[in-house]
Image (spheres, rainbow, N blue to C red):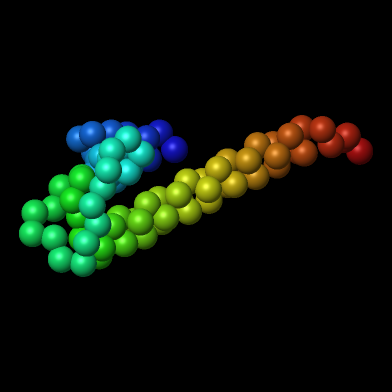
Length: 85
């Protein structure tokens, strides 16, 4: 999970996703079929779609990691509460 956090930093692999998210949340974003100059506030529809899919994959992975960590902790708890025969 910490690695995902680090990747979302400005200089990380997913830094562009973070900038796009901030633009969508705090400013006006122009989305068109054909965009001459693309940045956080002006982007093509395909770019937004690709970033959305990439973010969806990232969220899916984070959920899987959390489920796995919870499963590990629950198994530890179950094995420590068993009464020896």
